[in-house]
Length: 388
Image 1 (cartoon, rainbow, N blue to C red):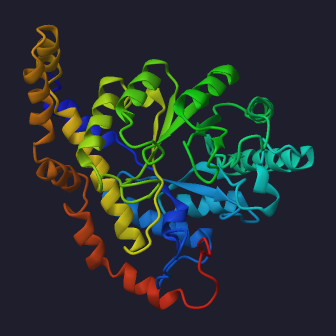
Image 2 (image 1 turned 60 degrees about the horizontal axis):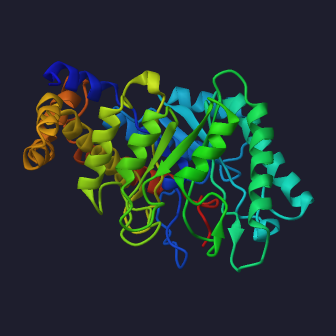
Image 3 (image 1 turned 90 degrees about the vertical axis):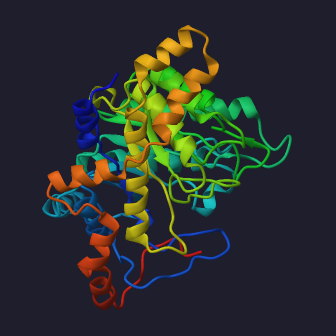
């Protein structure tokens, strides 16, 4: 059974990365509702991310998206982050918004466009060098809409070739982490549609290539915790993109749609050693806040992950194993449910208090006046966002 001190130590050591794009104007394919005080550049995005860390104590890194977060001096951006008490995390490439990529990026039948896409990925590795980032996160919208549109096998060959070139460019501890999505915007075939495809490519690349599990990128009914358990067992789980989905890739706050699923996922993370720093699993958020305030949306998401993690750590592993060995179906399920039904909010509030933080991050942020200040200060310029 996990001791109380071990639970507390694991929670104190937890780190959850927030995405720069969550602080800009973002939302649905149909409408993005602009909000006051939204950042106008990557420096202001990082300032907002630093607020999430200041009130939760467990969000010390922020992901960048290139070219959304392109700047002239990445070392200066990294220093700006450090001055605010945070660091630059994963670098996300964007090969899905240029007109050239209508028929794909790295899998496009046109070699000129494939070259353009790979050059952008290599540029992102240069950004990693400048920011000190460890992870290059890749998601491809590549695929086809109609049978016969392109050669399915040839597209896999092109994908493998591109990934190999980028992987060879990595140095030191840098990693390539590959995300999958089973549909959209390609509706007939998607070139990286599932964890198996991502796993196969990463396995061929080498030990510094791992899979990203986005919790919103699965068909209804998919057992995500099985995928997590399998990838952890194989040492190929690189990162999470936490969010919630009701129907498709909704990108809502993690734990909003199915908090029990988040708990089940975190139970497999705990069971598989994914909270151990040596596992190098990155716990990242990938969300867009269209109708809710940006910073509070991230704070609440971080808290939701903390709560699911705390409950997963409280699972009586010895009692669970004993029930499983005995074939006690209901007893084993009851062990999980006992942990899930435990109210861990007081425990997390106590840990924050011990760390010198306010026990309730949401209330503390509301009292801080930061939201009112940025609304008054961020006047003029162009707000960051998707522009949809």
